[in-house]
Length: 377
Image (tube, rainbow, N blue to C red; front, side, top):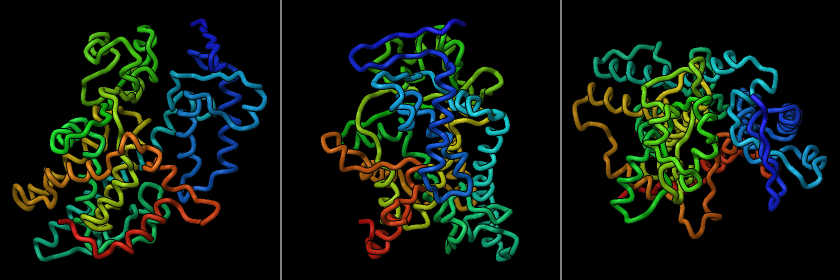
């Protein structure tokens, strides 16, 4: 397929529809720059930093040495996938996807262990092999690759489940609509769907276009009719699909930092850890062998509530619908004051600040201690 390029005079940028030699050079240089300059409190920093390259390529935000060499004219690639990034770095896509899925699977296994622990408690026979009092996997490695969790003890693992369920609802278009209706606000909304990359190209649309409802002509129904997005529960990368985000409505989004603190103050710190683990799933789910409709985070959240109530009875889950919409409202960004609402990505939560030596996650834990006596009305 012949590469097309379009010169955009006003911002001195050159749009590239396909990876080229510059893409490979810039991606590798920027990756090395991130590895040298960004310290993450993660057991797999190199794997997490690869994800930062997708947004940089889409926006044309390369490392300083690459930007200097361009002398004011830049190249950006709005159809960049994580898989394209992996290939440019000389990685085996299937192996990287499996490694990312294993991070998610460890978190799922932990939640299953919590349910087994709950069953043991109900039966009056807690078993020492239920490793859910520490946020680690079977190898004693921290969940989500989050080093902080390697030394975090949990008093009541059920609280982690509560926060995980809340986390699964935060980005849901359905739940945000409910918050809009209850509080009279307007929010950003979208859905995660498997996207067939070749059909997307044939339609003349990019992944960046999908994430901009006002910048594309096609409605969601148009995209479905063209076979660009799939409504199947699962599709595969081998089948030509990648994980995509389709924006449905413009508006302010959610501050992940405010969500973490809101859950910590209203439902307890252990619940906030559960929310953070669901956010980790959302991050690692961006490239896995199978692409799940709505994302593995939302799908898992529904199962958590169903399984909890199958054990303790219908209506027993310790988080109501009003609790969910309240947290969404608390975390909603004020559109007129966006700059005062920090919203860290998983990488930013785990990035060590050079001045304080703390990550954003650690800073929030310090703040939570000061608000320990806060009670939800």
